[in-house]
Picture 1 (cartoon, one colour):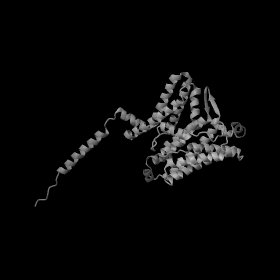
Picture 2 (tube, one colour):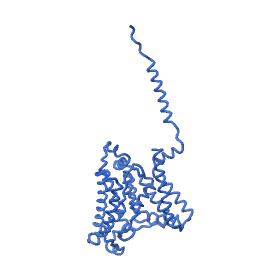
Picture 3 (cartoon, one colour):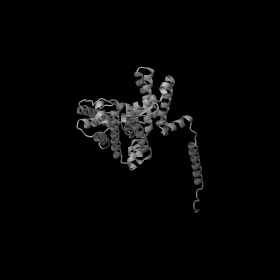
Length: 360
């Protein structure tokens, strides 16, 4: 019998099919994107672009309506002064939301930290510098508890921080006995508590140290989140914690660190709050948690975690400040401010969903 000759058709057919599939893949990869698709991918890779565009357009719009009165150096720096506290608290909120969490207790932690600073200095007679450190310790401890409950006990961040908000708020009023430390007393005995309320002038522009602290904090966190391993781990935990764990990231440790850092930043906001209002009041800053979430959402930071820029949070806070001051100068009903901000919040979430669906 003759040995079977090798079938030379199989390799030829395989090469033919392989060549066709390669051509198909190549033609798919080289397909031209439409302008809309390119724009979506641009927004996906630059999450701070949308709030920056909205901020510029809103400034131009109010400038045209109000003329030189709005474009004055004093007015523009007044907006910065008004959003300084929200910007600092928003930085704390940004870290948590990037990890796909949320912190409803940031405002309460801020106020409790400020109350501890004032009470330790005036009730217990501690040096003001030491009292400030105690306030930072309280803020960090509250954040640490949040982090442990979320990371170790696997409790939902919303529930944990909602409970912590109530606990801290009640502790604040019980500890302070609803007592306000007056501005005159602080100025006389512990002026360092009002440090962030002091200002420097450049022509008509007025910058408080609270504004400078907010800008420096945002710049520092932007560098950390974008140029350090710790920052990349924060994004990785928010994007996919299981994949981050497999890649060697200590997810539980990162969550605890993020919530603790958030508490520290809230304590800084508490110190800045004393400078802003001049006194230590247990009733101040009650809506800081909602305002910080508003700045984060309008700033294009995804509530689903893993995406967003802290610069966007700053732009979001400034947008709220521009709308608030601009509408006030026009003389409209203050309720219009809340209405427009509500529209911006819903629009920001819709845009985030659109970008994730098409460009993700």
